[in-house]
Length: 160
Image (tube, rainbow, N blue to C red; front, top):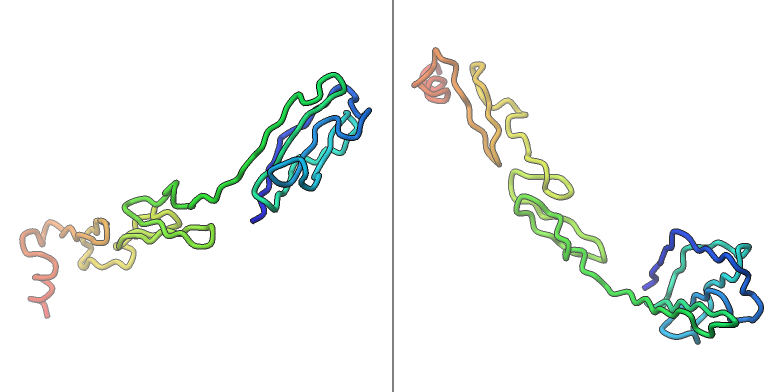
């Protein structure tokens, strides 16, 4: 698995390029025996700020003539299940596949994170100019006053 590590900036104010391994060095792997991915030893050094590892580790060192090893850090990258940060809403279930995830939504919800309540009133299911109230995976018809107490479906059945 290749992992990319990005740094916003690398700034070296003083030239420390006097010896081959002085400056900031970035290696692929767990040790400095890995492939050298980048070297910064003065303000004119290449300003690459992203490094891709093939071994899930990066080692970064900083050395100067007066300080043989001023800094050393090993960055390790772990495989995180994308469902760890379950972003699914409204009771949706996270489904992990190939490093990505999707949400299996409960009936009545849609969207990448089940964040959208489907509008059951969109199809205009209520008759006789009654007002439709959208609910979760359901709807309710509010009858006009002249039909109060009869019920829309009951009234409709009588007219037939």
